Image (cartoon, rainbow, N blue to C red):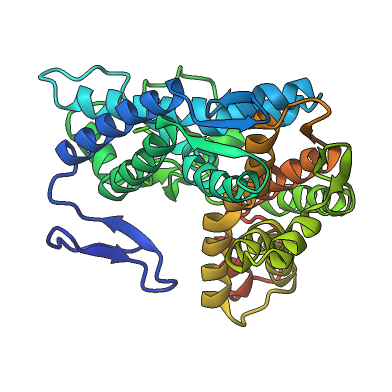
Length: 414
């Protein structure tokens, strides 16, 4: 338990044990995020409805939009990448901003609707899956490849994308979910009371304990499995079956990581010449052409970060099993970096999406997506899900003195 004293605006409250940010105190927790979210949504709609890039080659031209890569993936038979691209670049950013506007706008009304907690819950769950800034970097890498092949013109969506990324960064920095949850509770907006069910004698005898909600962070006495009084999320002392789910996702991602690097991610043919390109082949190509910064970005995002995520999470799980007390703060910080950097591995998938949407000129020049891109996209998604399933508090639990009947590595609730 950490009791946070009242502090002035602009100061962050941090955990004294692992230095994690517990709460950011803002001077205007409702009005400023509302204005920035509205600006971001307007820019996002403009970006998604205007031309992105136009390529001209030997008298032929082809125009693309931000989501055009999704249709190109579908044409190449990679439906999973089509759905991922459409969701992360178009649907989730618009939906998340709309949910934020709904909650903040509703709180500023005289009588807020009683259902505002539900959209805020979905807003929090969708946070990691909005990837417009990652797509912007992927488009930059794609542009450097296209300028050597044809005449490339930037559309208004390029400038709109840069503007919306800046606006969304500012909007996220000003938005503090804890302040919004507190505002909802102060206005009397709580989760609907669940229907009363007859409890078994064993369940009724279980004592209540202080449990922090995984969604709204409200700390209150409750029993395992009961619903949070503020947001309705089932309460658990620790994430259920965290180690088992994390291991399963890590193993699946590790298996797919091999074909993701061995098989080509795209096939480039220009005037009848060319062939398949792997992820590492793209890095080598950037080095040979002198684009060292882009080679470093692609290598870091597509090769180094996935390895860091897989190895880092595996080491943490092993340390939990062994009850290791070494480097707890370092491991906790490493986990936070894994969470932050996880989605940036999608850069290579977005590079392929931009290229295949534009370069479709038949025998003159064509770029098609290959199975390696689908495998790599699945690796990124699985590692993100593994990080979400992992509970870093288990590392501290395993390192603490335990009673004789406790087994290190189990997701204990006592």
